Length: 176
Image 1: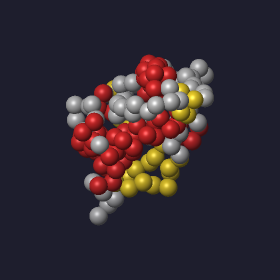
Image 2: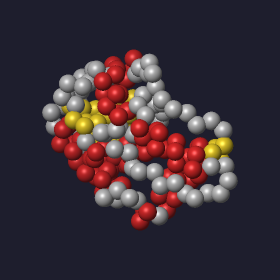
Image 3: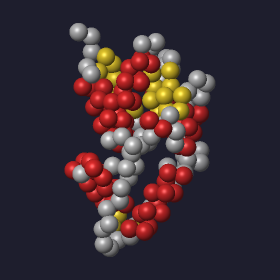
Image 4: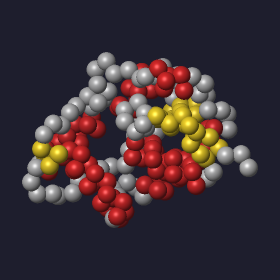
């Protein structure tokens, strides 16, 4: 990540951080791990968020030729709670995501996250007819897409590597 937020942050500090994070790309010199590059060696299609860091990730992975960038795969907007005082960034982010789970009417996307994830899953399934597909996106929304794929019979393989930057999960369609 190209920016950091150390210490305790007020609401206005976090709001500035979120804006800066959305505008930031990858950290200078960031490069994907070899195991991710190997996992993506056989992909026939690449779908990506239209966020700057996703586009830079696609380039860093050497997948720019034929990659399709789309706002459909963009991370769900973060709606910050109006907490009083200064708190660590992780608390702000965890509280924001928890509130979104419990109060879905607060989502400011044109479609609720689950419906958007279903559309994204359908797009990935259609692309997977030709072979392996890579999705270069963001953690929170990628989890929603993975859940939608799971409801459609797709399962995680044993090739699952974390939830931080450059992490990935391999999914396959369960054969019936």
